[in-house]
Length: 297
Image 1 (tube, helix red, strand yellow):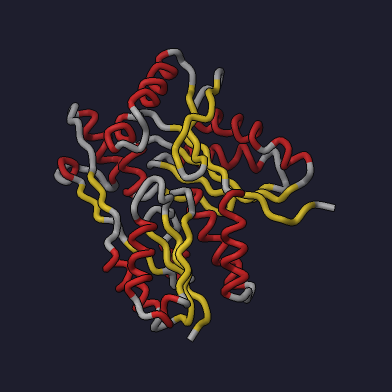
Image 2 (cartoon, one colour; image 1 turned 45 degrees about the vertical axis):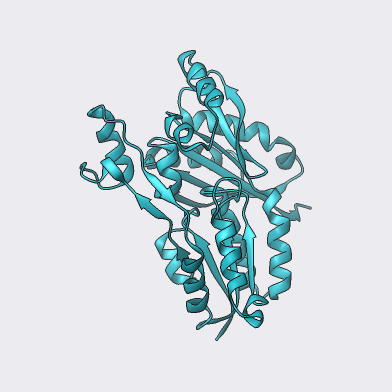
């Protein structure tokens, strides 16, 4: 039996290959595609584009995993691992963290002591970075308590920025207020690209980018500004890029970063999950980064 196992919810954008290789248990959200179900498309974003063509106002509905879903997952993982780390999407965006905590408290005391539930205060690329950090620490053979400490220290180091084409879904879900959605629309009409970010687990506006011809360029320019001090002192930075069916744009962003910096590593590019993707819509690109403790001599 292995010492430490990992559990994540669907808010993280880990690839199937990583999930299988590292024996990660994924706790699913309940996703109802509603009017999108019958539309053609290989993924949710293609269905959304089809809905736009047909002028159908279609939104998906998501429900957080139940405590029972987490209980079942905990018990299944305990068949292979002695201790469990469970990473969830931000508690400010979903009740998933609370469901996981409730599930832990339903179990007998000796099992509770072997489970740690960690609020990523993030989602998509940001939550993915935290999961990848956990995988790395587990592989290094760190103790359960040390890994938990390191992960909690890592959470505030994770920064996320993103850009979407239409704020309607985030607005309809209540994840952003109407005034913010209207601000985004207003900026877009002026040819200005507004950027969103995550701070203390909440989605907030973080700035605008003028003169950027597309989303990858706008994100790249914002990344340069946000990481200037870190790059100047040689801090190692790791990046995850996720996209809503725009691999070409995500790849362009990756190439722009890699062509200019040696101390920055793109650790993963993946499509955004349906849970987050149903809120941000097709064409969205998200860039998350975190810095390591080590410094260049």
